[in-house]
Amino acid sequence: MSFMDKLKATGKMCDELIATELLISAKATVRTYAVAITETASPQVREILKKQLNEAIDNHAKIANYMIKNDMYYAYDVDKQLEHDKEKIDISLELVK
Image (cartoon, rainbow, N blue to C red; front, side, top):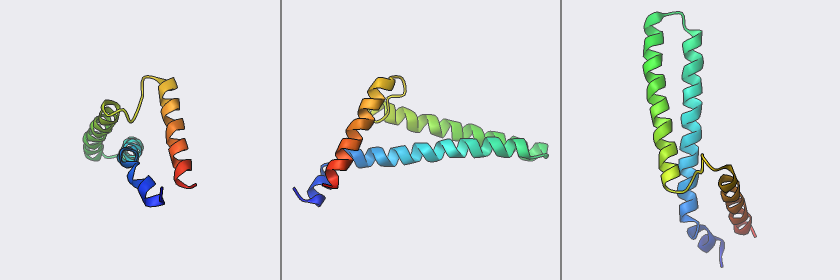
């Protein structure tokens, strides 16, 4: 099986990779807004940042729920998540053989 054939066979994994990157970015956005809120002295700016923080939290939840619903993320089952991660590692190693 060629590298391209192997890559095509990992379609769901590519979707999962994109969703994982979105989740990581959403989590970083939440942290950034939280830090910004603690750094600002302006009550008006603080209120704007709080609204944006809440939107970022909602976005993070939507992405996480999508991943959970589509068996990409097992937030409530550590053993299953570890097994899932091992499967992804095995697939990745197979791609480079």
